[in-house]
Amino acid sequence: MIRFSSSHEYARQEGDRFRIGITPFASEQLGDVVFVELPKVGRTYAAGEEFGVVESVKAVSSLYMPVAGTVVEVNDPVVQDPGLLNTDPMERGWMVVIESTDSSAFDALLTEEAYQAEIASH
Amino acid sequence: MTETLAAPLRHTPLHDRHVAMGARMVGFGGWSLPVQFTSIVTEHGAVRSGWGVFDVSHMGEFRVSGPEAREWLACLVPANLEALPVGRAVYTFFTRPTGGVVDDLIVYRFPDHFLLVVNASNRDKDWAWLQRHLPEALGGVHLEDVSDQWALLAVQGPRAAAELSRLSDQSLDQVPSFGITTLHLAGVDCPAGRTGYTGEDGFEVLVPADKATSVWDVLVAEGAIPCGLGARDTLRLEAGLPLYGHEWDDDTSPLEAGFGWAIRNPGPYLGRDAHVRQKAEGTARRLRGLRLTERAPAREGYSISDETGTIIGKVASGTYSPTLGHPVATAYLPSALEPGTVVSVRIRDRLVPAEVVALPFYRRPSTQPTGGSR
Image (tube, rainbow over all chains, first blue to last red; front, side):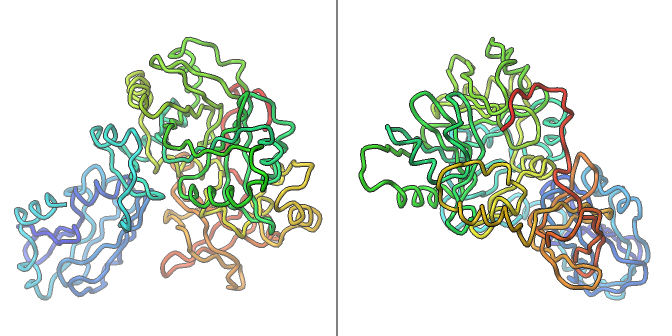
């Protein structure tokens, strides 16, 4: 199952873990991504808390954790090659995996349909 | 990426073309302009290795004519207009009595008038400045804002001259850097200067506003890559070219930015005393480049500190350099700080090392005809 935040992150549920990244819409809005800053394994975040930064040639954008939890995996390839966020944000361009202590925030996120409707109104 | 829209944005004659091509439009200096058509990095690369076209119709154009036009203008700019022949252009500034820059501009000398091309964001300010300094006895100088009559297309890149030569069916070999010619494009006579803002060879082409789309369409159909403001900024920054509001402002003298070579006016002009003094005594600060070895770009306003932790300046412009593959920035730093020194830039909660370097970051291979010096 996958859910989306209004700030254009996605959370893909994998058991009690969530794989977090940014949506193709976000990646397209950013343009050429040149830098990604991600947290270390072990950091714990509240839902909505800033967990990293993505920078394109032109702009800096903060990343917000869609679901509360502790980082258990970080996608090092995306840090080494931030262009993955432009070419494949949903698959190879994932950012972190978190283990959630409270998944209630997940249910409150947007469904794919609701998210698509929201970006269509942009 | 958030734009604050105070007033409706103005449209260039090419606005609808840009939208139809799917460009991402942003507000810049009160205008709606394309920031990118496809990708900043792709457009940047096209200008470094081929040719691209930018719509810079937001720039202002003022026409100055009359028997006293040259004498009057010569009192306002540090360039030597007496030495500027018909058919040539010069990069210069309106300067304040304190030496600071009201705006930077290019002055084109045509047979019967001067054309001043100024920054869009400063058009009203420049107009007021010129009005304020008009001679009391009117008649000798005629000043006209002709901005709305012209579109301006910057055709830039190592292939720009050859392609324009082909399309206009005329040799451009004899047009020197900062020389003026007339290009015949799409059946339209377009005054053009061998000038630009990218660090590459190229031309800035004045097109009558109502013919702008025909000329644009021909250029794009013939292979010019449409480029937006994003690439314009990365290209100019790599080439060490200052941008008003970043490297230039009313309190910054051309000498502080390393433009002492542009101060050539032998006569009196506003700012002369300050420039003479600065030339003799030096300036306390100096525009430098910063080369960052880490990946995070240093952005405008980030603070710069020395090895003792003392703040010594802030970033004027910063971006990722597509040509060099690492972030670059500009900053005014104490003049005593030599290139080669390593300073720190505060990027969010970290201090990132940056090497102070002389500008520019990028210089084009010197294989193209450049004709004259400016």
